[in-house]
Image (cartoon, rainbow over all chains, first blue to last red; front, side):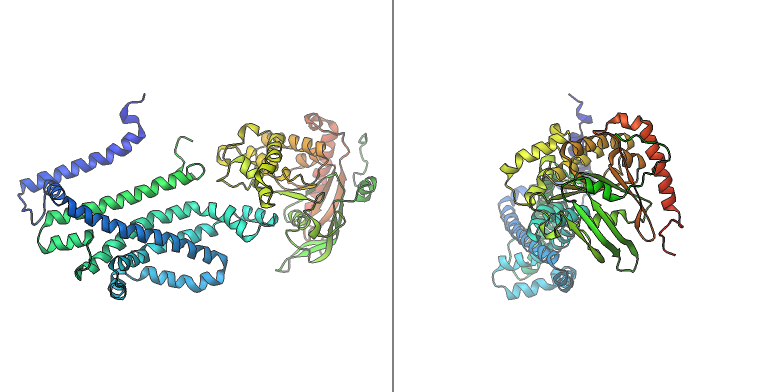
Length: 266
Length: 284
């Protein structure tokens, strides 16, 4: 058995963890030494205390935000993939629709969120729509790129064997696009969370939300700064969780063959 | 066996080869020429008959149109003028029993996400052959190229030569009647190339599989072929034809023979002549 420090997995987990512990320690000590008041900048211990104290309500808020995020993410994946399939079927479709996809991407969600929240009565639905709009573009662009990035030799081979469009799509384009698609998933999962939180902020100012962003807003109104940080902490945690899930998914799908997921040992 | 005497003309009319067989030629190129869309004359009108069972090699300086000719034969491109016949029929009939061909590219062009057996099965899958029915043919093709132990490997786990073997197995799995190979071993080191050449000629001999082979290597051409077409450029055309009259099946011993060396020397001289700008038949 190898010494623990030489094991790559151990170092990969332990090193960032150690950095985190040191940072939190410095933060705690700094706040104590300078005796910064809690309502200005809370110590990690205050945040932790608030996390426990407000646990049930924060957890409920987390669930609300996660639900919006996951719904939006799922919608973005389905819609984005379908749009990408459409784009690769015909250049004309892509040329005429792609500028609108870009338009969607460059319009800040904060700017359209109020409109959508007014138009759509159901809060949950309106938030999901906002977050979907944010998360959609990476899926479209990455999947389109992937479906187009076919090895020309293989494409030639399929043509020579008189493979039809559907067969070429299923057997050649889709497997070849997977690495790009998973790259899109990683970006999009994070964006879905950002979109959900931003939309909640907009909705929250009208008092029509109950997610983590609303908790932050509410804590701000009551100057409960530790609760603000606690909510922020949960948002970060959710983001890391999503990203991690995407990494695992991509590894499961690609580790057999794609360079990006093949470890140094092979 | 034909013993080579110095000064004997190698240049044999293609008729002598085709006339011997009682089966129809695999491919007939009838005054086919190729002018590219930018006006370049890729191929002057070419007449060529590829006999059933022969191993024909196209060789020549770059730009001589050997790959273009191969693509015409594979119907990957259409001739600007003239026509081609496959087994005395139109291309539409190609693909039926006894009229199948397979193409091996310079690159192995394997699907990186598929294991060796799935890669070899691909042409059958594209032809809607059920997996269970395809399995014996796939196993046999893999066995023929000596990769039975690597059936479940991914392409990235194989060496360049092994990948090429997979590519050849994929070509053999459809049981083709004509094998077209475009510089298949050009990117491999010489040792691997010699090995593959030896296996290829064995395969050809066992199956009498009509093969059209494009290469840059003089040694490879002489070792493998029953007939070599030397091509010249500007415009691409057939310069001369050489028949390699060596006993079959050939093995590594052939490479060391005086006969082999004589053929190589002659072919080398021809290639040098074909590369001259003033070679006969060149455009003024």
